[in-house]
Image (cartoon, rainbow, N blue to C red; front, side, top):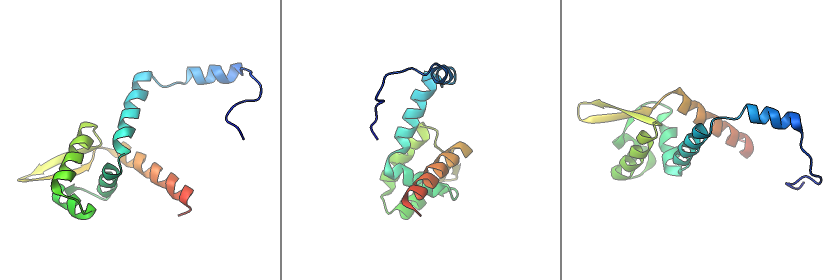
Length: 119
């Protein structure tokens, strides 16, 4: 199957439906930026670890086998994109997913990939 039609034609009803239901351009740009941040394997591993509950930077470093400074750098990017949030408890900052949307986004991506991998 090729990626192009063999004939040129416009299906007016389909074009009208797609045009009316399009998402605002600003929202799509924001979504692209968000997906770009989460597309990094290290940041994705951090988000995946946080699906199971809150963890501090030291915990995340131990789970992922990385340095605390490397994890901290990635958490700054995740916080700026509102994918995770921190809660200070004395001298320790615990991180969690920002909200249920992040968990759903990750869950859907993982489910899709498990299906594709036959797992």
